[in-house]
Image (cartoon, rainbow, N blue to C red):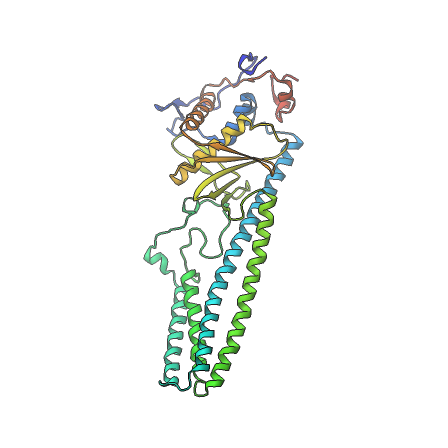
Length: 397
């Protein structure tokens, strides 16, 4: 018998009997708040309304596959977090390498200048003192900027690409100016680092000019300093290459691009909940990645790989796409549904998908308010694999 022709033999009581329908078709409680419906609720309800009802009334799933799935999702989160850390570590070391390489270039130019200029036509000692004062000034500015929460006083606007998710835990923090960085007491960012690098570079020139009365000795000091900075820059470049190699290995193993940016990753314990207060929808996608400047939700499914995406999983991805839109204010073009490391499906997020999702949310809320959740199929295999069959009053097996 087809699912559409299935005849219910039992139903359920409402879980929110005081709820009433809102003018837009969604349901609200006695306080006027939309009934909460999670993406997981939609996935369970689409799979089987009775299974959803059992979950809503406190009957947890009991099967080895659920425990295995939890462990698999934890491993996926750890892998994604590790990948993002390596990607950020690569960026960090490349940034430091660029700064240090710039110092090397300046020192090299100075070394060549001292070797080629026969006689200085200015007072090198006085110029050295001016450079020393300049270096001290840069150092004092850097120390003051690190010590004081000046960003808060100036209320500098945030320009992070990940701003919509700044208050949501679960994202991997970058090394320079993490998401939501506002400075503070004894905290510094890029500006402070720039002043410190400038202080070091200028101080090195001031020291070298103290020996400018002996042109060859000054050139020698600069040459030795240049070699030292070159070695340090080479070390940073080597660290960047190692981190990039690790990120590439993880990217290949998980079938993602090495430049993919992880804006959010769920570990079920520390991640914040995405919410849409206009219809009660909420949920935690497995990941939110940035692809071509767009926030794309990703749902990872473990276990048996189906021939085509399950409808319940599609609804879940659509829910996450809606939550990304509600959080960022920008509609993602699609969501991603992944079965294992190789099978990846793109689920389009358009007007038809929004209509489909809203109907699903209203259906769940209606059953929450009026009751009537039923087994909607006649498939013994589906009941046999249900993790809540032990509590089901209408199981086929």
